[in-house]
Image 1 (spheres, one colour):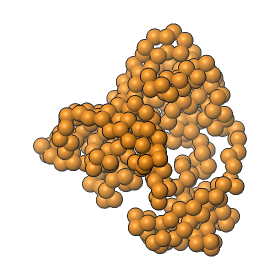
Image 2: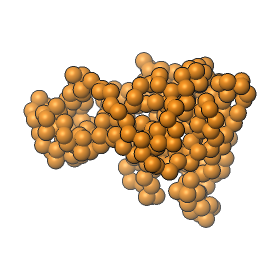
Image 3: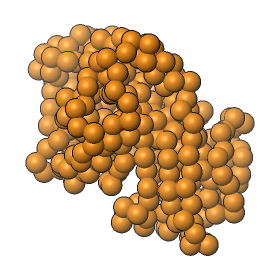
Image 4: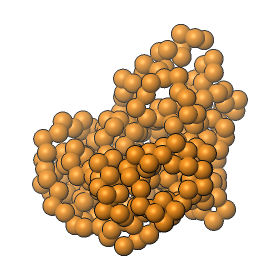
Length: 304
């Protein structure tokens, strides 16, 4: 068992214990969180509490995390928006609110479940849980990503990610007006020292570089294009918040009260460029902005 401890700050006060555990443990469902609370794998100030316990300031929550178990992931007939496919790679446009691969409490309904139904030949480098998955995007982020069908393709794509030659461009709607037409954010990103559910700009983190360019300005918001040179967890969300321009809909790094009723942050993986693992040809793929994103833009344009 791995034991992790978290100190509750003002932003978490009043939150149910099961909700906190679900949010803190990546991709864990609330029902699964309730299960480990019942098994006494979660304690508050070294005492067992119920799932509906309301967190208090400076509570210490300790969570015993079990070692991952290899599971047989089931193929599911889930509609997929496939942008491109050949014998080596699949490029998919993932909708918002879809998890990329199974995790505790989320073993069904993921992109991987749908891919296994669509094709049987996915790379095995990342094991049973994440076959073919070279890179991820958040559950609440929509957009384009590439999946490897075999190990040779997987290694090639992973190398491109590592040397930053894979082009990944996102569109984001942020709070406030960004005055500069373009810029670069270069920091170190790591786990937040107190709120372990979050990432943050920290001195001992890993290098993170985001290039941004303003596409459109509105009355109180900005549409920006963000191009990643690195791929740290929540990188764009952290960097935009660092610039004091958090993403619209981002309850973790932005405002707690949101004007637009979104399922998550207004962030879409718009464009992907890569070198094909077999042919060596440079290929570029683009995805349309989803309906939720266009609806927010339409509302903002009417205010100008």
